[in-house]
Length: 192
Length: 276
Image (cartoon, rainbow over all chains, first blue to last red; front, side):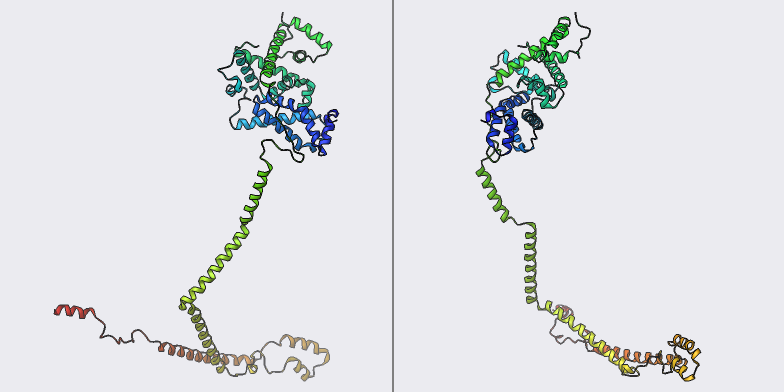
């Protein structure tokens, strides 16, 4: 029965202490939010924590949701803020491998355990460079490209979530793609 | 041939992105494709963007798609993170905190308790000290005795002065400023002054009522000298008594050493040594 309801209707039920309604919201958006967090943070553990924190924060602030924006936009906004907070914490702990335009931190980017350097093929090496390139993008450019590539959101959806004009979203995506192309060409790696 | 309208900040950038992601309408698609035929920069750029997109897609496919989404659990009452400690531990901590809070006194209680202990200790110490050292307790006594003796001396002095006054009865002491001379009003009555002038006469007499008579002013120096003489006599008597009291105290010069012979003197010792 809950599956037929819209996100906004589910939130209304969840405000009235219907935990199953909020569970349905989690089921619908869990994967996309996790994808966003993974693309933003490029680390599975941090992405997992950020996704959990996003839904916890949403649940705690259900009463503050006024219905002016879409639930998806609301959740994405919380997730992006959560990712930024995680990045700030990581930067404070000097454990951050991303968020550096000069790429000085990106060189410490850790590969997943199943992609250890000794076992990596040329393709894996290329993927490592792609992660580094994405991770070295400025936050505002990175979040746009992650929303587009990992979550497969439309420009309009991204515009709604970030509360930016449509032209700004397209312009940011264009700039992000240009920077990524230049970074990948500079590494002299043949893009797959 | 490159399009002259195309540069780094190409006006077609937004259309290029929309075309790349397939979010462009049919009319704009036609326009942009016609532009691509003439603009090698844009054509080159869109090819490079395509390769970037495929690289990101490859990354997503390889590292993200196989990951399971994190389990997010919510209790019916309160959202709880999966890594949060269980409720029993929290309860145990809270109970421990309550017990600790019970035994840890607040600063007010601590100060009150400390004050009571210190004051009680001081009281006991003073009690023990006065029992062990009676001399310390006599300090108050001697002070009281001194005060009593000085009071007595004062009383004696007063008595002497009072006795030396002309009249011992204070009621009978005559104020030199108050005379037995009849007042101005009496005189007015005696002199039979006409009623028309009586008011003015009464007013004048009232203004001059406090002024002493000539005979009393003449008697004042004699009374003062007599009073001074008697006061000096009283002072002399008191001084004599104080001197007598002092004489009763034995002076060290007058004390004779009764055991003079029993005491050894340095000269005797030297004499003995010299004799030997």
